[in-house]
Length: 241
Image (tube, rainbow, N blue to C red; front, side, top):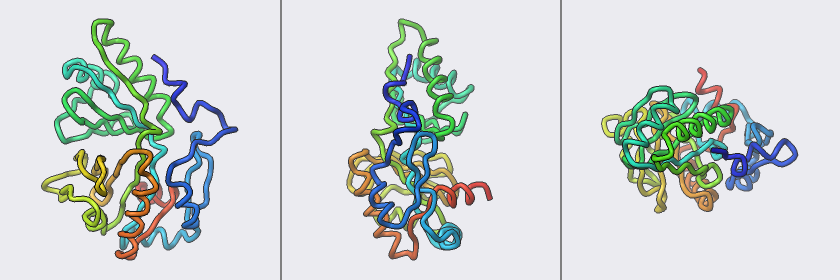
């Protein structure tokens, strides 16, 4: 099984894949670098302000360059494929697991999303393809690359829950959505997903065509909380701290 014709990182360094939020990020002062085949907003001109937003108020960052694979199969087949591809992990309803540089997220018993770090994309695609092939000819499994089908934003900082509450009714209090909690639902009045990546960090996904809309909604809400956008460099620094 091959995903080459669908993968933005397969086109080479001459052509960069671009997020649907790039235009608004550029208007907000973003500086871009080519990373893993994508034009990535790495900073917004004031590193100290970005650190302050992450530490003291709230920040958001474009993560649309994440690998996003959708797996569909009969529940028993899907469970075997995920176990093989993830290195032995099993999924429970509502709870994603972190393995091999990715979040493995159950949507329904017959459907799952794999949300992978861009630098691990090739390895993850190969692992999923190998696991699907190993399931056998009698097993029907569909693997769809949704990398350019879903836009993604990370919300991070002390005000993360309050920021989400301004445009989404999904309950992300720790008792309802612990770290690893994965919730499909309405996001800014459109179908989407919310993944709790950390105590103060959420990943929000919507359809690609609604990426600019999501950025606008989040930027407006964040502005009322003394927050704003941050680049990939600040987000990575905060995660490593």
